[in-house]
Image 1 (tube, rainbow over the protein chains, first blue to last red):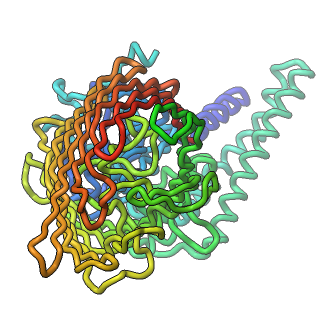
Image 2: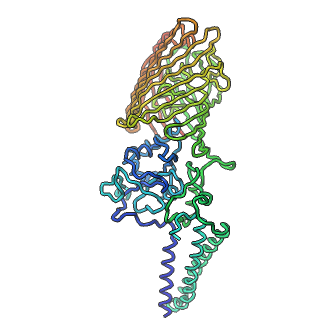
Image 3: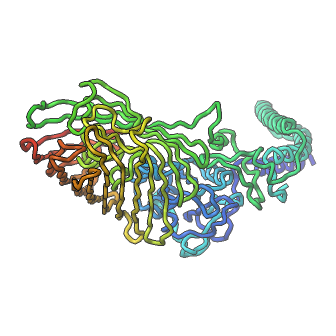
Length: 174
Length: 465
């Protein structure tokens, strides 16, 4: 009886700890999503449902400053060197790190770019920022998506579409 | 709890604390009951370690519960959840910090509450208040060596402009931008020297407050670079951004012998024009224009007092087609009335056109400008045409470039009679030693109507910090 009670208490502890462990994401919204899929996320109040890669590029290069609902766009980037950021620079911006940094610096200098991107180091941070800032847009792995943010389609493709265009180079990431 | 989709974080914490209490009590009781059992299965030393570990764990959990209870107390009674009070409990963050909108249906907004506190530092609201500014300063500078066979000049090391570029996000819609430049004399107003040799002075080159309503309308007030052509608004007071060691003669600053009103004080509106893939943009400006009294020995930019009631205005239109990324072409028209000493009033019209193609590895800039001065009450009109073309290709860290420039002003030109004709090629190489440091070497050959032809070599170390 005592052994059973002890075992039960340990199991209860384990369940409790799992329940309160920070940063646990909700499961990805669709099945069969591999870890190399990159999700573009916006605040849930944002009416945008889909952006083309061309539109994404204008957003990620600061050439577009407002959403249709009037909110100013705030771009959230992950730290340099992270595979998610590399994927965005490669597939959306078509720039390397140096070119991207210089582009924004020059845009700020000329006044054409109103605000420089926010840089965060973790998917949790990106999610939280996007959750809190109505005009924010960022990106995380599909497996890091939870229901606090809204995932938008790209080029008319949803996240679970095999033709979805944004993938992380997993080999490079490793 | 999860069904309460718009719960503010503090309310969520309070409820979570209650749930924790409910969950922890039976678990703690179970712990208490299980300790003798665990003890029976281990050695005495192992028992002590295990017990101590478990007690530590319980203490930490108790502390956490106490913390959550404290949060509950601090938050007062749990408020009814509504979108209206949500912003006050969880302010928006980032430069876009405006009135927050709580998502309409967010089943788990409280995820933030369980994150480590250091993560919350990222979510500090970024807006101006009396105790905190969001002033950002970026520096630019350059050190040069000039060698030339021009008569009356010497080979010399020279300090370039030390530029402090300052921005601040005042609110979601407002932003401050400034350029504070330290530079050594002497000045040169249309070949008339001014200022003291080798002495540093301070100029506030840009001083702007910007209002961004949307992509189609932005309003700027203060001292700005006039949107004449391309170069003047693409490059400001930093040589590091520029491929070459300096600006084309056509776009030289007023205090460096330039012929254009580079700076202006007034209002500027700009934005996109709905035009689909053509990517049309506009800029409309009205300001004091430049000081016109001749000879000029004072600041040519009318920062405080305009010499007349007439205001200079400028309208620019340009296109950035989606189909050819990096291409920009457009034109601008500027008009002002100048009142030089001892001369009739001068109507100044400046027409400019440009076509540039700029991608990270290649650039080709072409601009042509016509400065037209018409003396009031006479039939005298003086046209000063000018152009430059510049081409550069990047090979890794190296960027060879070539520029040819031309200005042809009349010797009887009422505003800048000493400019005359100047033209010549420049050939150079830029080497980016790092992301922030560029080394440039440039050879110039100058043909001038007013003096013998001369050549020069410039070495420049430009940097940002």
